[in-house]
Each structure stands twice: as structure tokens, then as C-alpha cells.
Length: 473
Image (tube, rainbow, N blue to C red; front, top):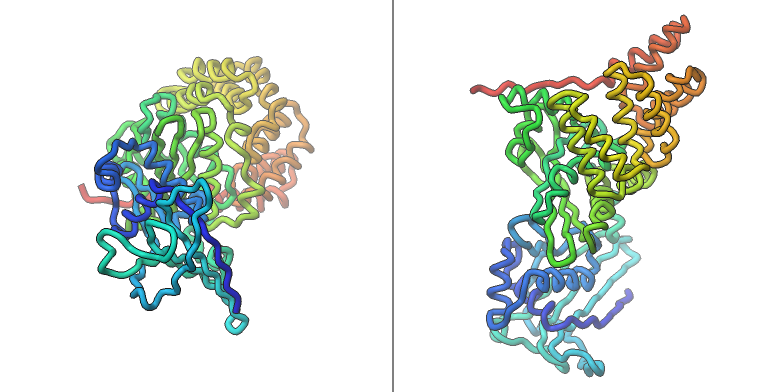
């Protein structure tokens, strides 16, 4: 048996927050409640509270999005979720007297970390012991704890955190569909309206494991709900869309502004029973870092929902690389997508043009223009924009690259390259119906029926169907 100990100090403000957390385990604590009760005699703003909680996460070695100890509930506050065990003082191995390091705040918390390993049952248990102390020297209590016991914040991790991650049951299967709700934008900055929902959709669509309910299927479901096709997907509306479309999970996000920082939270819930399937959070250090942080938190959620780490690593590129680093360009593109889905394709043209003007390297903006000009029978502009998208194909996701290359080779008549591209698309994303559909059409045109039939069957098997749940009105 081997024991490892480390002394970690907290500043007084972070200590106060931790003390209030362990006094209220499991209870949702609103920010205003914490500001009022943690520091009743001092003025402390929400930014300072967020900083104190960030310090606690680092001390507790809680990685972004893990939520093993502290959960951020958008619009509600915080919740301390680690079990609290009350241990009588006589049962506690007291931390030896420690002299305060020079220059350190004497109002500190001594954190004793004990790791016990045994070779008998091949498991590792890790316990965090927090003797609550307001001074250096022997461990002692103050306030409400003076006549009670010492609180221990403990968590047992069988086989380590990696063991739990590798053995947990997948939250979703490869055939489940998720609905992405509109972001709850608490920043007051309109550039995040709709834009982050579109960005999150693009990021999640990189996954070959998860399936996002398409915009046209969402529009069909909204019509069945007697709502306009472009209606905002508030949590309530998105929940009904999720149930009616026979989807499995609802993905909702929120963003806030605290000083110069932008906390981002994502939460996936089971549409049928409302249970939380997974959650993740991150904090952007500036407005320009929001898309980067959203990429990171979305990838965390993908893995928590059951996608393998290898798949996430292979099929994930940062949003600013597969879309644009310009929030304004992404906003224009998002507005164009919405108008294309709800009004008419030509209504989206000015917004797509604005998007590529703001970012001349915005590849999917050119691809969107090409598709619209094809619908408008403007071959010259279709070719011009598709060629530009093809030249910038390194700046899109893998799935989108396959689409652009297949369209380009079809336009230029490079049949062999088109077949190779479609075959690669089908192999990388085996649940997509489009590559099989296009391969079937090509083989039919070549009279190769023995190849066309299997592709047609695969296309038919993968083609999404909207199975509606009948609800009595």
C-alpha cells in the first residue's frame, strides 16, 4: 500500500465558496444567493464568483466539462454534486502541523489528497480529504462546524477516471437522432442569436456517430405543430420537435458574458423522460475565442454521449477552420440558411454573398451559393462558386469536403474521381444515404446494374424517414 500526500492552499475567497458548497451539498445555489450569503459584508460581483469557482475546479483537478464536483446550471446557478461524508474528529487522520509559506494568505484551506492502491483487487481508489481550517497549525473548525464534525469531500474512482470513461455505457447509439435547440444567449450581443446554434449543428454534423435532425425534417415537424417552419426552437418547442420526430436526445446550449469571459454550457437530455444524458462546459477568454471554445465543449459532449475518443479526434476540426473565424460572416451565413429554408432559395443569396465578402475564404458560403444558383438555372454562377468552394475545400469538414468534391467532379465530368470520392464518403460515413444514392445513379448510367443495385439498397436503408408520434389535440 502506498499513500501520497500533497498540500494545496486556497485563497480566502475560494475557500469561502467551497465552504458554502459543502454546507449545501446537492442544492442548486443561485448566483445572487451565493453573493449574498458567502460574502454578506462585502461587495463581490458575479465575475469574482466565477473566478473563485474556476480556482476550485483547478484545485479539485476537475477537467472542463467533467462536472464531477461543480455543475453550472444555465440561468439557475451552481450545484455541488460530489457526495459529502461526515466523519467524527476522532476518526480523522489529522494533517500534520504545517507552517504557512511566506507571502501566502493565512486564511487558507489545507487539502489532503490521499491515493491508495492495492494489488489484491486491481483497483484504484482516490479520496479527497478537505479538513476545513481557518489557520495554519493543527486542524480546527470555526462557525457552525465548531461543535459538529469535520466534513470530507470524497469521491471514489474505480480504476481511475480513465476506467470509468472506458467502461461507461454509451448514452446514445449510432442510429439515434438529436435535435439542436436555439442557444440561450445571455450576453446581449445579437451576433450570437441563431449563429451559435448553426455553429453547434455544423460541429456535431462532423460526427459519423451522431445524427442531427436536418433542417427540412425540423421544418416538417414544426408545420405539424402548427408553427412556422423557421420558428425559434426554444427548449419547450425543441422538446416537442424531439418527441414528434422520434428523436432520442435534445441538445441545448447557453452562453453568458462575465466581464471579458464567455461561459458556454451544453446539456443533452433524453427527450422521452427528461433525464440528463451528458453535459459539458467551457469558458472563452474573449469574444473572438467563442467558436474555439464551442468546438471544444461540443467534442467533450460527443465523447460523453458514447462516441469513441478515436472517432472524435478523427472527425473533428475546429469551427473556425471548417466555417469561418468571423462571427459576423457566420451570422450572415446563418441568416441565409434560415431564409433558404423558410422563404425561398433566392432570398438567401444576399446573405451568402455578404458572408463571403466578410470572409473571402468562407468555403461553405461559396458551396451554398453554388447550390442556389443551380436551383436558379444560372450555370455560370453555379460553376464560379463551386470552383471557389473546391479550391477552398481544405477549410471545410470531412463530410462537406466529400460533398464539394463530388459535385465538382460531376460538373467537370471527371467520373472516376467522382466514384472514388463517393466511395470514400460512404466508407467514412456509412450511415449517409447521399453517396450511395449518387453511386447508384452513376452505375445505372453506365449500365453496371450489379453495382447499382447494392448502392440503391444501401441508400434506401439509410434514407431518413420522419416517423411522427400522434398526439391527441
